[in-house]
Structures are given as C-alpha cells and as structure tokens.
Length: 256
Image 1 (cartoon, rainbow, N blue to C red):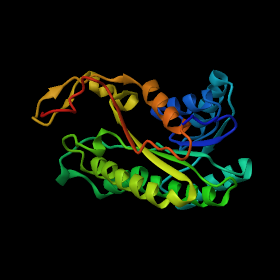
Image 2 (cartoon, one colour):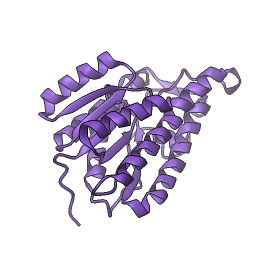
Image 3 (cartoon, rainbow, N blue to C red):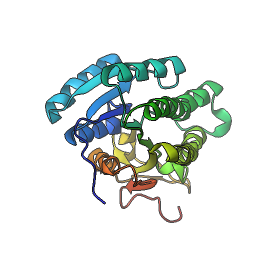
C-alpha cells in the first residue's frame, strides 16, 4: 500500500496561526498541500500565512473564524468551497485552556468557553467538512483531531479540558464510523508535552497527581507536525485511528 500524492490537495488547519497548528500547517505545506489556516486573530493569521508561504513555497490562505460559532464556521467552509471547490483534509486543532483551579471554583463561563472551543468547534468543523466531502468529486477526505494526553489521563484540576478531550475521542470514533461509506477517514493524534507557548510553564514545574510540583520534559512541535503529515499521507483505505506522540520521559505511563 503506497502513500498518496498530496500535491494540490486542500487542507484546513484550525488554530493554524500559532503553536502546534502552525507547525502542522508548515509540514502540510511542505508536503504539497494548499493550506487554509483559521483562527480568531486575523493579524496573527495573515502574518503566519505569509511566513509559511515563504518557508515552504506552498499556497496559504488565512481565514479568521471562531470555531465555536456555527455561523462563523459555515462562512469559513463557504470560503473554502468558493476558493477551491473541495477539501481533502481537516485538522481540528483549535482549542483553549484556562488556569487550573479546583472543580468547585471553576466558573460556568470558563466551562462553556472551553467546551465551545475544544469540542463544539471540532464538531461544527467536522459537520461542515462532511457536507463538503460527501458532495465533492472524487468523494471523501480525511479528518484528524487533536486529542491530547488528556484524552486518556487528566492532570489535577483540569476537569473541563479533560472532559472535552475525552469527548474528542468519542467524536473521532463516531466520525470514523459515519464517514466509512463516503471514503471519509478520521483519526486522532494525542500529544504529550509539545514545546509551545502553552507548555512553557512546564520548565518551571507543573502539578502532579501526588501533589508535588515537577519539571516535565517537552518535545519540539515539529515531531507532532511530521506525525500528522504521515497520517494525512495515507490513501483513504488506510487510517491511523489513534496515535500518541509524547516526550519519552514525561510522567504519563506509570503511577504518579
């Protein structure tokens, strides 16, 4: 079974202007995709798209969107349809977190914000991707969800983030099942300590399950990006359902 030629295919990376999303966009552009990056900050997106185009020689399109808003998501996919007429790959990467607090102190507003960005956003983009991928010729495409190690094991005081990432696993499996008859493949990448703005605090130590504070190792985000590019390179009759890419020495496997 050979890998597919991605040249000229269309990819969308949500949260593609910074961090892991930007690294993924870079890897996909280098692999021959035309890449749409979305996010809420238009200035950040446009700057990233220009830089990525220079770095990879690929075509990048920046479209600002709030993935938690169904109207904004529909507008995003309408733009993709008008510009390219199809979508071959959706990477549901957008997400947020809030400072870790005891469950009883979490505000309802923070709970809703995390659910909207991390879970509802992935669902809304998947829904629009299904509509486009079912209708286009040739039919089909691939969806890759950013799960996180938190899709398996929580950190202390992270109920909303952990709940959304566990839910992403359910969404991934349902998407893989419901897309089966339409050549829509869906997989999930669970990331452990990619070095980004969000993980910088790990250099100073983060809370462990036993109550201690410990410094945790991180890995370069390019390793995540390369893994996503591999998942995307497979023909649609093959699928990586789940993949974990993590810092080898992070405290995930074992008891803490």
